[in-house]
Amino acid sequence: MLIVLTGIDGSGKTTAARSLAAAAREKGSSALLLNNYAGRRRMSLLSARLGIRLPARLADALETTMRVFNVLVSTVRASRFQGLVVMDRHLHCQLALREARGLRRGWLLPWLLRRLPAPDLVLYLDVSPEAAHQRIVARGTDEESVAELTALRNAYRALPEYAGMVKIDADGPPAEVVARLVDAVDFRRQLKV
Picture 1 (cartoon, rainbow, N blue to C red):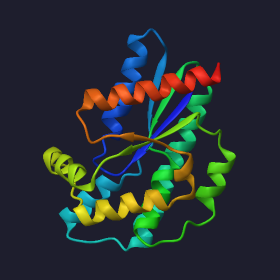
Picture 2 (cartoon, one colour):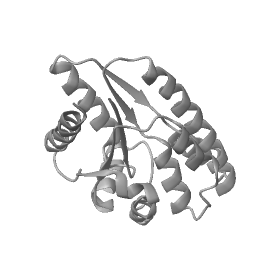
Picture 3 (cartoon, rainbow, N blue to C red):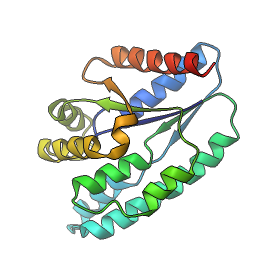
């Protein structure tokens, strides 16, 4: 079973992905956690240190290349694994970033989404931009304004793929969010059987 987690920065994707895989293992299932980062945080930190700002199209090209590479590697790894596969981020995330930046969808990412094995479940962690901003400030590793997070949230909701995502309220405590994730996965598993 292939699960993909999406959502704005600060929605708890990475924490939720780790917790979901751990919960599956605690129940005696095999679980594989795969991260599909685009390197955006590292690029923004490096840009800040060097005092430069990459043009939006160049930043997108670098991020898209990294994300596509990671998704393709993760897809191969997932195809060889028997059990639950949890992907932290996917191509949907890059499409939402493009939308938020006012860039075109292009043809590559939608084409890949149609060609790659479809996830059994795409979970969208829905969190208010204000709560996400508080989490980002607390971790202290990157910077996103409430306005940028709001634009990204609106961009996710504008994606044609959004209609097929299962929305999970991620504003609550981590234990509650994980319980919602586990329930969604268990429900989908029951439908598959």
